[in-house]
Length: 254
Ligand code: SAH
Image (cartoon, rainbow, N blue to C red; front, side, top):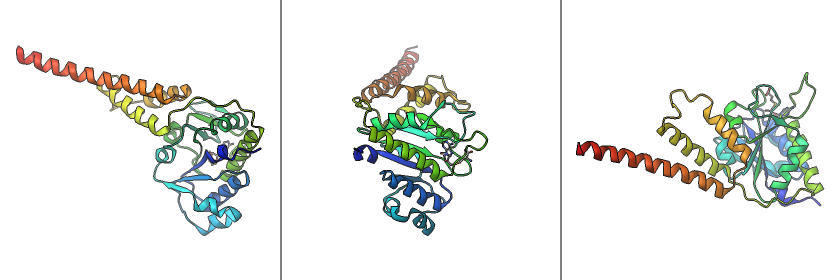
């Protein structure tokens, strides 16, 4: 039996979609496979009659779609974020196949919100957008022409997710995962501390933060683990302030 709860916990996020028709087709692709949570990040044109035409019987998915000003806002409640890339070269994280990822997602989605993030029709996902993704999927298409239409890529993934959730054999996910919102708070705190201790130069940060994000993404952090990491940062800041205060006091004595 299909687990509707799991399918309801899977968000399809379209970043900067240009053609409203693609938004409608994506909504239809989702509904045919039982998914309903569509999120749009700065769509070029939405709502739009073309979107409704292409959605056909899935207009309800369009009507319920969330529109967000930025990708982190769209992902705030998600515990695992997977990006879809038409390209395989020059990716910081190795891309996996749709079936393998769909199985992991279907299992996790029984208890957590998860998201699949799709890029703009012309540019795909930007490096910044890729930075929010903890894993990447590439649909192994014709290597000479591997770029699917946006809604077609959504259809492939939704089909795989439905199939994986139908199989229902995934091991029960028992651990809780930190949300994207909590992770973002951690990354901001970490960056602040790295600058304070002189490890990161804000004038030339290089790829330090994206690399650290990638490292933490592999760990699938739990909320309690994230609390420990936040605690370390807070203590580091406290002892830095204390050392600075002691210095001032010491210089007054002299
Ligand atoms: N010209 C863009 C492709 C855009 S297609 C580029 O070269 O990156 C729009 C979106 O559909 C992509 O950003 C990706 O999210 C998805 N997509 C298209 N083909 C895909 C494939 N073979 N594997 C994974 N995602 C794909």
